[in-house]
Length: 268
Image 1: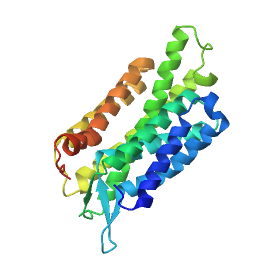
Image 2 (image 1 turned 90 degrees about the vertical axis):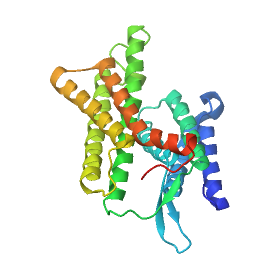
Image 3 (image 1 turned 180 degrees about the vertical axis):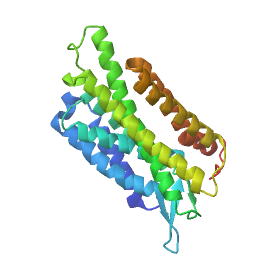
């Protein structure tokens, strides 16, 4: 938790902006999307405060924890939504993400994680950044997959325009966009794993490694199935959900168990 009052104020202002963005359209009018953008910009400041710490001598150290990782991941996914919402307004999705943004900001304020000394390997910060970036890319893929599943359900129930997704976006285009995020996330995740295995001195075969590799295998299987067997629709998105859940368990889930349930510092 940032000790300075201004730091706490930034977290509170971010949560407030997200709360305003979560108001229904009939109460918020046209300023709710602007409040979401303001919240997202302030959220970037909280991510920096979450992940960096300065000691008494002015040296920078990294802060690790399940809540900061969740906060950074949601911030990345929200960034994708903020950009796309300029062209494809989705008020219901906006309210969900605004509430999620407020929740992770407050969660990271309550559970800031622990401060670690500078990494022994110069590759460690890049490994961590690639890991969080893959979280964000797969989070964006899950967002689009959920929209895709919802659009297909509406089509089956004859409640939506034929052949279109949310707000008239063609289903095939939405599907391609979903799996472009999967492809990008898989490439970034592969780079993070290769860096960890090849260059980090503290790499070990623990629960985090096992869940990461299981997630990588599931998502790799999804990509192979799509390219070789043409997997589509809910069958493909279920593989995506399982792979993303395994990745979430790999870092955020395992650290949650250590930090919150066991009340002790997890291994590096």
